Image (cartoon, rainbow, N blue to C red):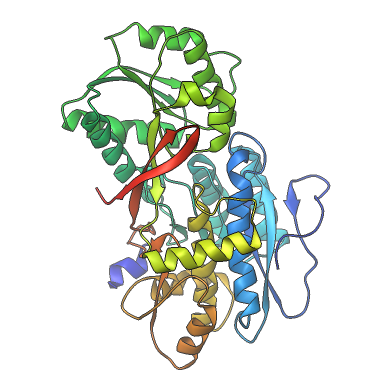
Length: 411
């Protein structure tokens, strides 16, 4: 690990606060509280239940295997940003100032992550670890090494999506992308990747969220350049489902290419399995070894049998908790500066590898002064100079009404 890299960058309980959507627990002796900003309502709400479950699983495993530092239990303070940057800043302020958390898991959306970082967490020196903020712009924050993410940035996702789209015999596409950092950034990455393989963008449109209809935009896109498919970059509850329904009902498009923000079974259910059959897309995937992935999957299913351990960003959320807790353990204290300073120490090689559920082993190695290298449920969590994790991209498809993983690729 270079000097330059260093210089650059339990469980949910309680009731809602009176004015802001923060869910907390009373501070107790022998307890370390960590924050989480999730989009429990708004456009990303469909993604939250399994992501929250992944966070809870990590906390439960850590607490059951000796806890953090001298046996203190981790406890979660969760806030709902309502998929809204302004609300995100409000709840982040509450977590940082009133709850005094040393680290925050999240936020989920890239635009909210950028807003929260600039307004709240960078000035306060609080590390945030997002499991799902994938916009390239996150890497460019002047963050004093406080912003990390366990999800793979969209530059890689866009390149992979462009390549596999052309490989499937699609030469011309129209693009609709939500008008925020995530949508614009991923649309640009896809266009560069698609055109580099000889594909053509017939027309593109940045759309605003939560419109009652997108028929006019879709009609314009469908009428330009004879596109073979629509590439949609958005969120289910912020216009994504409406766009797909409008496209199907008016026969503007009959083939769809989606990204991670739309990788949710609720989309198939809302639009219809027949209309969505053959749809494909990409998302940050798992680079974990089969043994480590299976250990995580089995533990998740024992604790949350009705939720999907393979849903988008769940393993990344699980891993975010682990690296935060390991940084505390390695530092010997649970303060903000210590967590920032030791995240790469526990996540990056060299060191003895520890995997999902191996908290007791990690504690013992740290106690004897040995270096550790966490390789998680999503794969090796190696933070680069910008705080981004390196990883792989999942290619998925809708087959017989279900979202299935087709392959996992590095480029």
